Length: 391
Ligand code: PHB
Image (cartoon, rainbow, N blue to C red; front, top):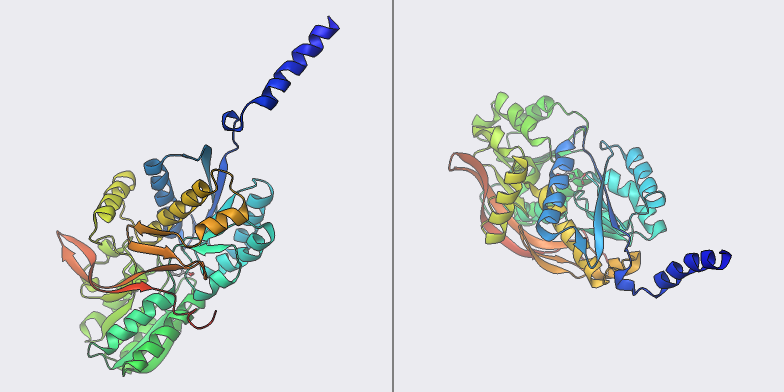
């Protein structure tokens, strides 16, 4: 009796040990997204979550034998929460990759955790140049403010704009936008007549718009983080600036596709520089926008495309490691990826781990009864100017 019992126990174990690796139940591959799902930047979270889910629906939920598990955590845009959630995701959930980061301070707060845990951190929103230097484990699929600001500075200088007031949100990406716009605009013969900064939290733009009006520039160059564009446009119109002859230009964050259609006539003619427009004319983007709208009933913006591409970078890295994963191997496989995105051609620079992509100059126009950022010029394969010469 006893012998049979022992055998019963041992045999399955022995069998299990000889089962080839491929038949073993592989652990799920966990991607921990930390996003602002509530608060002032909630649209960023909503866009990136929707895009990540769309990518999975289109490309399958299993990669190289590993089931992909998406974990979404809401940090409400508060850095202390991001840090705590990142810690929990690494220690308790044992995520294979961290992703998301809706604002620069949230990415910066997490960088030391990624370094210590050797977990790749895919930044799909935050856009200050310096972020990728905060940890060797960071890879970025969003964009950098200097990429857009330099393109805008050049365009403005070459298009009869002589005097500009800059108006940016008073934190790192705003400072990047202000600095890089200014130097490129000045190189092209322009003059900055005033530099204004508005607070990140619940800004009232009225006093700043009054200063813009008083300075009587040819144009005002604006950067605001995604989510603030509509409120700004409303006040711009209420204060009559749209009729003042002062042209509105900026980075594409102010004519964010998430809100653009609700902005009304005030947005018409606004010229911005950015890497993504929902109206980008390519078969891949048409399919992306159609599928995204069908699944979500709202238009994808530049945050969505970064979330979608972030998933692509993670999927291909996992594939390259043949499903094994592992922080360093995943990271190595993320570096240097080249692919077509709904935004156009994209590369992850192997040296800087930052995104290289085309920057488009766009103008808001009404097409088919809706407002769109219509691309009319392009700078190809733009590397982050914030890192050039500073390697
Ligand atoms: C950032 O905080 O880095 C950030 C957020 C939203 C944007 C751009 C930059 O639209």
